[in-house]
Length: 441
View (cartoon, rainbow, N blue to C red):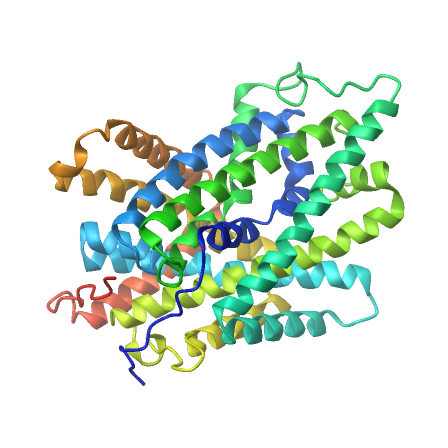
């Protein structure tokens, strides 16, 4: 089943790669976390997102730098393998699979949940199977089709965000004591720095996915320049949307009293736009989740492809690319099957896997920049700021990792334990080396 001469289809522009990452992040995800962050920060939601944006920009800079030096689809796995060797790379790649495998399943769960609220008579498993099958078909048919569908849905998302912002501004202007320009969403008497940092830790979840842009390195034109730019564009643009949206929702509803913290943002949507707009908005959220699932599905299949191509996991079938479709069909189908787990898994358990994998990968990439610059003295000239940014990013990601709950830690280390058992078997208890990376562009 090996076909090393078949390559992925290099079709994407910088804009398409950036929109892929932004769609993966999903600007409308702010709706899902708004209430929880508002309560945690005492209303200083905008500041929490400012802190989260700055922290993620540090990690985005590290991803961009490593992607420019290693334009291969393996993301943190590739970078760690190149800098610290194949064993370290395997460990990071194995843990990263938690993130990349379970994000599509969580997004499938969120999409199916949104659709079931619009059509409650339809059995929930029907929506899960429908979303998983459609995502599998679209990704199998090629990255260009995925890109086109993603851009259309992304434009719809951005239009909906703009409409929400407009309605918030109009609503504030009609409130007797409304203040369009207020410091309260940034700082007020009910908040303090520790509350803001707790909110920022939750806000960082909104950024999960910008790193997936690096998995498109082999399908993007001029990846050494395009991928770093796309990563920064998606992170800055996403952070800007999160900050503006949460600011406007707080000024239109400055109280922290909601019917439900989980649906706080939907209450505000109904408050400013009425029930019809709320229904349309909910439908667009479901569609946005599907787009994020498409991107997550594609990323997971590419990570498996690179690890299979390097033979750190079996090259057959994981290293296979369909010669006609130019997509890793077997991996795409496998991820689609995993998405069906949304029928049984709950969001809490699934996100525990995601957070462990994501924060481990973020930390590893920041450390990779530091290790790379220390090993390459000719690269260090003029990069003192990048070194400091990577140190700051690593420290922040380490703090996020330490903030994980016991379920996330337990599940994560359990998965890591399985990986170490596989590694010992693969290397005959470390007496045989892992294959070194052969996937250079």
